[in-house]
Image (cartoon, helix red, strand yellow):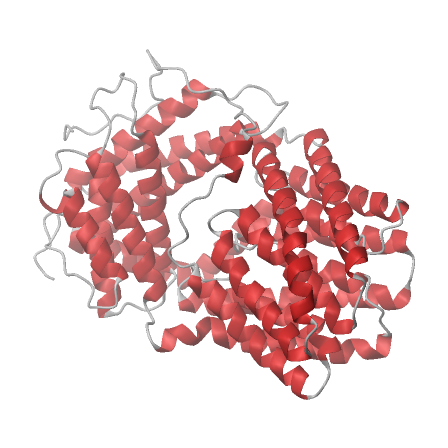
Amino acid sequence: MSDTPVRPGRPSVRKLPQLPSAVRGLAPASALRLSRPSDTWFKPALSVVVASAVPHLTLLAVDRLDLIVYTMAGSLCALYGHGLPYARRARAVAGVVLGMAAGLAVSLVTASLTGSTAVLIAVGALLAAVQKVLCDATRIGPPGHVIFTFVSSAALFAPQRLGQIPGHLALTLGAGAFAWLVALAPALVRREGPERRAVARALEAAAVCAADPGPRNRDAADPGPRHRHAAAAAVHAAWQCLLASGRPTPVRRSLERLVVHAEAAFVAPGPATGAAHPERLRAWAARTRGRGPVPTPPPAPGTADELYGIDAERAVLRAREGRRAARRALLRRLGPGSPLLPVAVRTLIGCALAGYLCAALGVGRPYWAIVTAASLYQANITLSWNRTLQRTLGNLLGVLVFAAVLPVSRISPLALVCCCLFFGFAAEALITRNYWLGSVAVTPMALLVLEFGGAHPAGELIGDRVLDTVLGAATGFLAAALVTNRRATGRVEQALDATDRARAAAERTVADPAAAPAERDRTRRALTASLVELREAGDTAAGEWWQRALPEQRLLAAERAGHRTLAATAPRRGPAAHAP
C-alpha cells in the first residue's frame, strides 16, 4: 500500500460491483444448522448452576420450594456479562439485578391489584417491549431481554398479595447478590481473563485476514471483505475491552501490544511475513487464551504512541465528561428517532396478540405465549424468521423431553431440584450451537419450575405449552411482518455520514505532521468503530422487508475507502517503540 495520504472527500463509485440482494432469503436449513460452540460456553453454564444451587438447596432444606420462582429470578442474573472485563461486569450485573427486581416488582404489584387477564396481558406486553428496548440500547448482550420477560410474565399470573411482595423481592435481591458474587468470582483467579479472550479473538481474526486479505486491485471483485469486517469488529471489541478494564497492569500492557500487531495485520494487509504471518498470530492467540504468561511480541512501529493514546483515551472515558458522553449516547439510542422504536412496537403488538389469542382459546398460562413472541424479535425480520423456526422446533422437542423426565423429577423434591439444575446447565451448554438446541433444554426446565408449586397433570402442561408455542410464534412473526422498520435504511445513511466524517478526520491527522500521536490513534480507532457500526447497520437493513432501496454502491465505496484510509495510517504512526 502506498505511503501517500488519501485525500479527503467522498469516495469514487466508478466500476463498483453490485452488492448481493438487499433481503436475504428465508432459508430454514441455514437457520437450523449447528455451529461451533462458543469458546466460553461453560462459563455461563457453570455460573447459573452455582448461583441457582445454593438458593435451591437452602429452600429445600427449609421445605419452601414454592418460593424458588423468586430466588430463580435473581439467580438467572448470573447469565449476564461474561464477555465484559470485571470492572465493567460488576456494574453491568448489578444493573441486571436491579432491572430484574424492578420488572418483578411491577408484575407482583399488578398481580396483587387485579385478576383481570386482559390487564395482566397488557402489562406483560408493555414490560416485554420496555425490556427489549433497554437491553438493546444498553447492549447488555445475551441472553438479552428474554430472561427478564420470562420472569416478569410468569410473576403476573402467580397468586400474590401486597403484603407478600417485600419478602419475595428480598429473596430475588438476595439471590441476585449471590449471582453477582458468582459472576465476579473468577477475578480472584484470573483477573485479566475477559481481556485475554478478547485479544485472542482479535489475533485469530487478524490471522484469517492476513491469510486471505483479498485482491490488491481496488476495482476488482473482492472475496475477502468478510474477513476484514470480522477483523475490524474483533480488534474494535478488544480495544473496547481493554479501555474498560481499569488501570493498566503488566499483563494488560502486553495485551495492548498484541492488539497493535493484530490491528497492523488488519489495517494494512500485505505479504504474510514477520509478525503479521497468520501462523505467528495464531500461536500468539493460543498462548494468550491459555493459562500461561501472555506472549511478549516484538516492538511494532508506533507501539509507544499507540499505548500513549490508549492511556489518554482511558483517562477521558473515566473522567466526568466521558461518563456524560456515554449517557448522552445511551439517550440518543432511546430517543424518538431511535431505530429501536419499530422493534419495540413489534414486541408490544406481537406479545399482546399472542397473549389475548391464547386467553380467548382458554389456555391457562398465556404468559408462555407472551414469552414465545418476545423471544422472536431480533435485529431484523429475517433474523426474527430464523428465531421463529428455532424457537418452535426447540419447544416442541423440549416438551417430549419433559414428558420423558417428569417421572424422574417426581421421585423426590431433591430429584426435582437436580433436574432443574441439569437442564439449566444443558441450556447454556447447547444454546451457542444453535438457539433451537438450547430451547430443547430450556423448555423442560421452564415446565419443571411449575412443579415446585405442586404437581400438575402432565397432559395439561404439554398441551398448553404446545398450543402456546404455536400461537405465540405465529402471532409474533405476523406482528414482525406487519410492523415495518423503515428506519433501518435511515440508520445506514446516518452510519455512512458518520463514516465519512471519521474518515476525513483520520485523513487530516495523517496529512498533518504536527498531529499528536494520541490524536492519530484516536481518529484511527474512531474510524474502525464507524466501519463496524456501518457494517452492523447494513446487515440489519439488508434483512428488513418493505423499505426503500439501500444505498448499496455508496455503502461498498465507503467501506473500501475506510479500509484504504486505515491502511494509509499504518506506516505513518511514528517511530518504532524499542521499549518493551
